[in-house]
Length: 315
Image 1 (tube, rainbow, N blue to C red):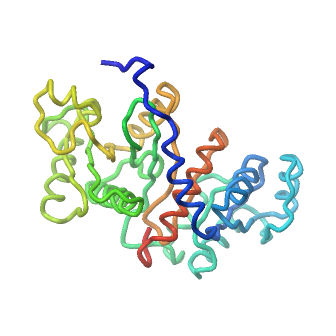
Image 2 (cartoon, rainbow, N blue to C red):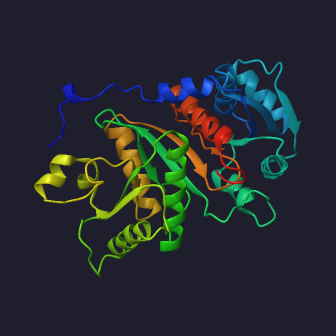
């Protein structure tokens, strides 16, 4: 049953994360190729909130022109000049590998250009984990923040990839204070069907969690979307599960599923969606020109929280 608008919950769950992040020292962040007004604004807004200490990397003339168009001053903000976006990505990755910056923030270059530099064999930022993306959604009709993974990087993940994607999201929520996240591995149905590979992967991930190959969470699947987020749906279908109806994390079968699900929640359910890349040695903030100020600040706050508290060598 669709909730009436009167049942929607307070839509301000990011405020807790932003307040926590403000209390800590600003995170030294390389802002990569911020050559559009939107990218410059995102960096300056996060700085003004005490979330990041930005280092702008890219063609200096273009950066200053973007700031002029945005009507903001770059006084007190360091700029490291590079010839083009590819060089900016390479330099930002180099500084992160050297420990001179603690996070990366996407400017106006393409995501794959930045991430290509991060995952390059010689980058110094790779770990034993697959890099993956999380959307942290504030959905008015859901009772807590909801993580969707992976909706932006891994197009058709293998079972091994999904194990890393799942563990990245679990570790992320641990550092935000969720002691034992509830992970729903999604498929179209809640039963294992040989003709539906997503259900086989979901069942395998569930067993992997029970055998210690995935740790720190309760994992169950396959679960259909309704069963994962609705106690009523799970009860009607007589699904006995520690996760059904209460999921913190939704692990999707592939990028297309995750991307469409996240955007449906954003554009039809009024959700906000902060985004981060996990699995590298530093957090990576992925912002969009369409993001609201609240979402941009939430993305920076989440990066700051996990960047300051991450285990050595892994995000």
